[in-house]
Length: 76
Image (cartoon, rainbow, N blue to C red; front, side):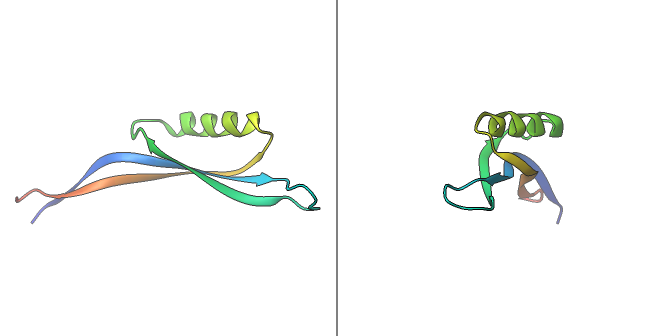
């Protein structure tokens, strides 16, 4: 029984630092962007994350990509 993993899409996850009003230390937060094209390059995703969070003056701590696959039984 051969199982094939067919690429579906990706999720872009950005961890960033946010300064909360009235707080002395910044808070770490995370934002996910669904339905990212599987064919997007790592460099493109990194550039987009930094550009988006640069607009709101948040420091990007980490950029991650989670790829999703559909597992299909080739025997069926």
